[in-house]
Length: 406
Image 1: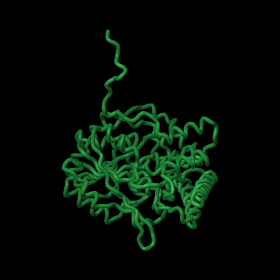
Image 2: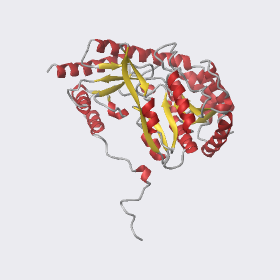
Image 3: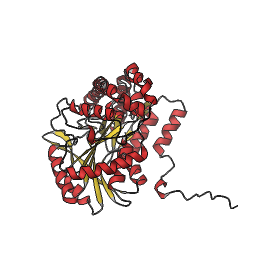
Image 4: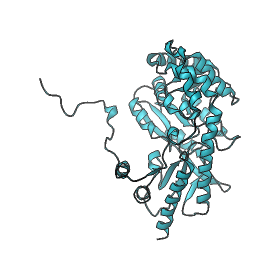
């Protein structure tokens, strides 16, 4: 028998770069050496010392009804009704029949790509945004194009907007969907009404679907954000809006997300029939979480307030620290869990990041991680405990000050 080759012919879609980049390698070395690293990239809320109503969350998981397995392709009706009520509380009209459950938003993206695209066809994504998209695109055998989010100053205030002209230029005959992240991660920018109107025109013209990832929708920095819109009621073109427990309840381990389908009635009917078969093939959402969802979503205001209070406190501290620090610029945002800082150009982004890590023992995201077009930028999470966050930011700014003044 011929021995198996050491170079096994794995699928090309898994031909990723397997070696760690320099930043992650040095982070690992710093931790192995015993250095106490302040991690300002932490995005897992369950590791950020938040107070959860644990007994209320865990109690429903032990219910006797969880022993019975009675799967539904779209998800249990009671769970979908709970999600519809969650949106009703926000004054948005969503019916249980529009809702499809999945185990995660990553899985939801996969289901939608399988529904909308053939191998080799294209999807448009915002830039900057999630690094996850490149993996999802490759695993689904489709092509990734990007459209820019542009930061500019108007009337003395900074804000992000979609470059709709650039987006239109990226559309090809094989473009099947436009992805929005609303609010975007990491820019924290919401889609505006006039932008959605133009996107609807573009999608109607080219017969393209809209996919709106709204997992951060509950984390607006303004209580009445009149400029922001959700796509859950967008009926003009085929639209898929996503949410999930990873952000809505800050419970990523509970593994439940949802897709809301909207659009012209006949197209929605066709899409729903096909999407139901896709979900029926996998049946990935577990029963206990679905059974608990109505009681869990009742806890959402309490959990959301705890996290948003922390996010706003850390954000306010960052704004105050940078306000009188002309070497850096704090980029304005409208929501989410992240903040972006533009650094002085004296050094490259990589050099700044490695200095923060090795000299100051603070780990931050480089802008290139989110595919920024320019440098140097850093991206920090607003989730860490206030004391830890403030210490880390002070160290970063002290390093910048000493470098610029050297």
